Length: 511
Image 1: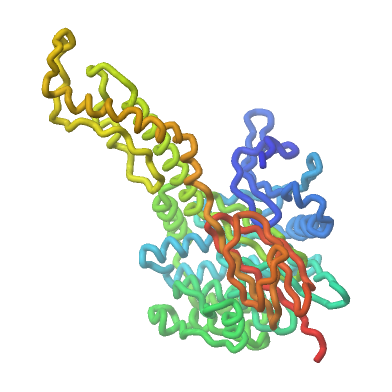
Image 2: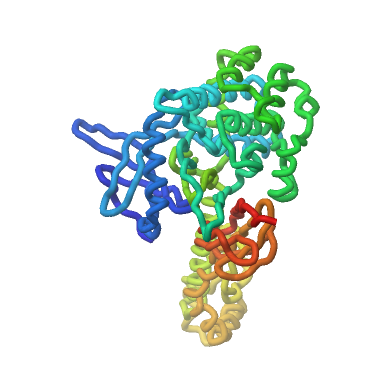
């Protein structure tokens, strides 16, 4: 699908990717006197513009997010419709999300210091306090997670993607359902939401507790074998001791995080302001912001590629209506680098095939290619058409006076042997244009869980009782869940080589 060159008054300079039913771009708005503003632009994918419910949720996100003005919240700058395309313009945060920063540290065998974890907790809590106590009405984030906390190259922390899960679930065949697609976000769902569908400010604080535990310990507190196992661990409050995992952390910080993770909402902090007061005992150093900025810059250098800007809208995608519509993670450099590597492999393959053809063609001895001309490309997995056997480097080319002599010199004999094999080698070389098929994108994995229980259909095929793990081709797939027949239908997009998780809640029939 070709991307538009403009949306409204914004030029689209780079497409970052698509998630669910929306796609994101880096946009630029220009004005007189050399004015230029870089922004993040998120628009609904054209094939979903006719989905009235999704468009309504997209509009709701714009309205809710535009109300929030805070240092630690990504700002909504504009909203518009261009040639039937609805788009949202957001502040561009140049850096990376917290999830990617944690992963980079883990690859180096490191974790965030307790002081920086306290700094992160204070900043995110300030953002939540502003949203929870907003004058026009409380706004609950409903998806606090590391992928939605952006860290700039200046060490700023900003919470993104507010107001995307406010819609009420649909009614299907008289059965009240609460459905939504959760891509990697099950570990942040509080017990009260799983059991009753109730969500308030303390539910956001629970998710923040999971985030801070992950920052400090380098692992999630309730990680189970399956999504349902994870849900059970959250409901029962079963997790490793944070004090054991990080004995160097201040007792006040450990106690605050452990309190946030309690399954009973009343046992947690009553508000974000109360959490901020508790974290005041763990005062981060004055240089905390600079330390965080240094970590981001180092992580970008280690990425070995131009860093992706984690955008406020880059993780926002609504796959199905429901009270907990969730978001796919920000695209990482790894997937981009994988596609680039495959493209390079294909290019090298075609170049090698071209060299093989050139070697196979009759040439005068003075222009035979040297072996070193094809030895420099790096080793790749893509198949390379075998070239005609080259003479050993020790075989010297004949002297210029050799052609008048009928008697062949010893040195040219290897070349004559090569020419003798020309008819056999030419046909394989002619198939070189078919080689790019080796870079076909791999399948993705779709994992579907249903609570409390149910069966699953994917693209109309019965898959059996959940949980279900199935390999699918890259693209959009229809998920249906129910009991004896499908009751819920929704769409999820799976990327090449990626794993997406769908979590569906059903209300079982009486009896």
